[in-house]
Length: 137
Image (cartoon, rainbow, N blue to C red; front, side, top):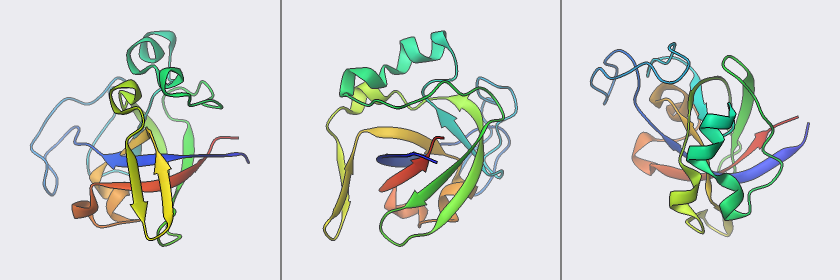
């Protein structure tokens, strides 16, 4: 599988869970903060038109639809989580050039949002934003 490096953050969706109040269920209608799920910027033409990862120079972001599974690895500690697409996002073009680092390991541009359950499997929610690699093959 090919890897795509960038930043990962977390977001709330669905039923109340942990730090999240109840909110919408995402573009796929299945998103829940307590599940191992994520938002992907290229789930459809409409999604890509909102997120515009290409504006930040992010390439290799294949079209994947609801339910597709990606593996996200925290580049700070090597922890890995497998999640399924449940929403469109993050809006990558709003964060072009943003950079997350740990020690000498850095990555730029938000390329995926994990649910709190998934993010907390690889990092503390208080980190908020970490460098990662995503298997996109």
